[in-house]
Image (cartoon, rainbow, N blue to C red; front, side):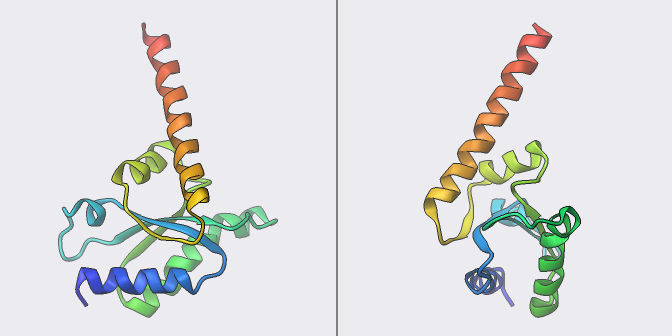
Length: 129
């Protein structure tokens, strides 16, 4: 399959996953710097967190394994709500949303990440001044 075909399949899988609200592509595939064996880095926002902390942590990894088996490509999925801030900021900067059933939620997630980044950056600048 071509990258475009795989991305179409990923969009379809996201649309058929009721727990997914937003999905972004980031990394080398989003920047068009991927080599043929590069994985597909995806960030997702789930509808709501699971009650069990371990289940919540493993949720994106279980989804990645399921989709990898279906598409036969390497996929990495992170939950944007528990991702480390520098990685979440890369997702926002790469600006490649693939799926969204709630545009407002997408913008809220992106704004939350940018605000946190700005606060951390400003704090760091003040500490180093």
